Image (cartoon, rainbow, N blue to C red; front, side):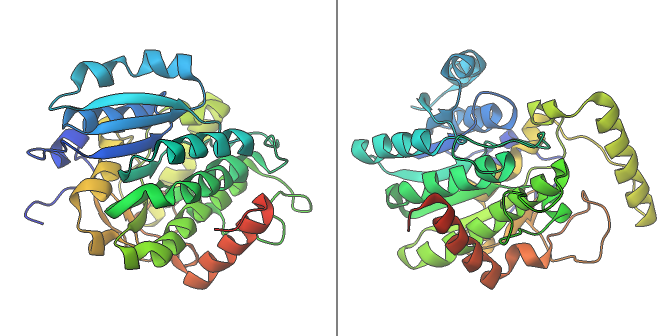
Length: 322
């Protein structure tokens, strides 16, 4: 690459001079935050974006800016997708398969964070069921639509540092529930899904990668009160100080969405395939650092045996083989 990007790069920075006319992209979760900005940036550079959302009315209002700034043939269509319901997931995927038009990029952006203990419509723990299993079924069902040379990008999180997956007790039936351990499990699952998806599809020219967008103050944190959020940032800053690093700083939404479009459309496929990215570059494995916002990825999140085991467990849980 001729240009280096970093933590403060925005979507417009990384897509500067790039014409995406003729490209077709699917992004989940385009009713707020990173999803809207990701769709806006792609459509503004000519891509046809399909936004998959739980609440169509909310998304119609939130994505007005996407349509206003679409250029060079770019545009946006919305479809209904509730990741917490496999019936909804399968219906959305089946409709796309029936339509038959290919995608150059699929970005699994939607998600929930630090929710109270709960269950999806199918009885899965809310965060694992929504963040991982919903996307697992949806993306696998439309995998054949990803064109050779295309990519799958899983928006994970540095929150994967909170916990590895627990394939013996994925629904916290026996384990004491904590919101961030559950979030960590689901985000580790996002990374592992990309690792195994990449292994299974790279021979046909389709690659997959996962990423951390950065700390962005969006709707994702709606289940945390301000006191809890302040306490989390205070703890993060204490950990960073121990590592000799400066205090945590929020990213803007355009900065947060930059790594998604960089990994999906700008970086070389061999550079990012099967890897974990943040701040518009590929991350190194760092098992020793304390802070959940320090750069780097835990080795368990990239472990190929762990990825295969999660895939098998996920198939068992959803009752479907891919």
